[in-house]
Length: 192
Ligand code: IMP
Image 1 (cartoon, rainbow, N blue to C red):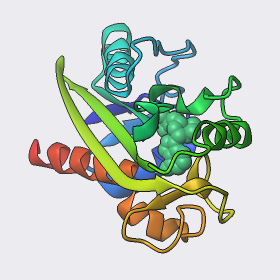
Image 2: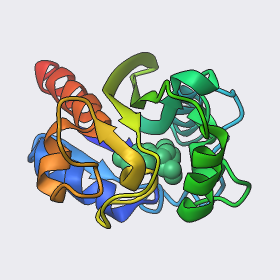
Image 3: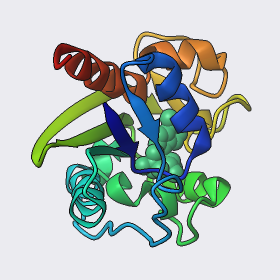
């Protein structure tokens, strides 16, 4: 079965290809000649994930899935959430995003947070969603240099190391993204 992963991130494509095996041919946005920016205007992680997958299905008529992720901090009413990538204003400026997060949590002892990924699959026009979350807390300062985004300040619950102190392999065993991806893979394999 041919399936588009609605992303331009070649690492994400590689990773899912390795996990899915030969029963599925995974193609990227580039492979289907989609140069346009996918819409992400719903204001929620679930909504944006669905919006991207549905856009590709409607405009390119191919079965596809899209993911969307973010960090939700309880004391900040779920922020940065869907705005995680550009919390401080510049898309992908992790240092600025972390500094703003720490500033907004200054003096707040309630530090609970979760990472969330929602994958939306549109298969023959039908929509299915798969969610992965990992609970943890936000430290008062950065620790570790691996990973990306908010990893240096995220301490997963029950673990002694931040995501940025863990080897990538270990993070991948418990991360929100891996959990959502596992659910997608299980579903896809059940359709064979
Ligand atoms: P995306 O939807 O996968 O592009 O994720 C959106 C944003 O959420 C990223 O740019 C990061 O700021 C944040 N984020 C998502 N997953 C992670 C993670 O595993 N570690 C750190 N930050 C993350």
